[in-house]
Length: 264
Image (cartoon, rainbow, N blue to C red; front, side):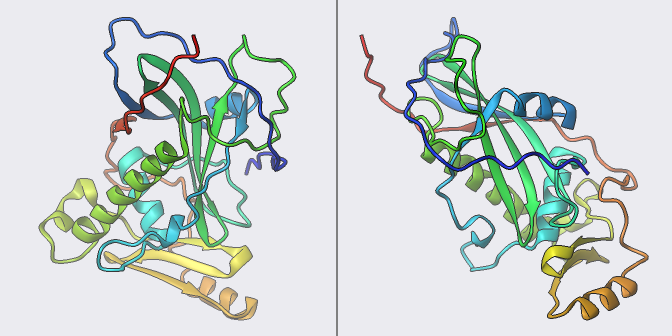
């Protein structure tokens, strides 16, 4: 599996130019998530830097009834919404990744970003990156984490994207992944039997006959015994599902409108 280099944590106060003008587009704020191949994301990785994310409850984000998503819900839900996962993860710490190109449109300007949703130990991480434009400073250290740029893709915008994806996954969990609901019989929303592993944290997650589960083990011995029990369901996370749908690869997400004061 490909293991991207870990970035250094730090900050700089570089002033960034605004993106190119979009002719004929009225003032609005939105972004698109475009599912991209691993190779495309790797190219973007080399011309972008990582962003801090202040939304710390990622996996712990629950619905109104306090119900939380398992790693299996994330894997199945993201796969049904965006297509098969990628391989940009550490297979000791996780079992899936979903890379995206993120195009942000605000006040008639376009700003390019990227996102990789990665299973990392006991939770998925939403790793956002800002793509550096050719006309920007050439001495920007791409290993250094920086705060989001408010007039481009703010922390609130990042939170909006994360919560939008969580809402979609909770919808699937409630309506499609719960036996007895009408949507649970829709073959387009069906999660086939699978088991995924998190060896670093001794976690086994999966879905068997429509029932999702997640087990944490107190010892490697118990973890390995459970692996033997589920061995017939432990497959390559990229393996084909029967009659797997081909979902749209681009999703548009509204963002909050900001009144930006011109520097002129």
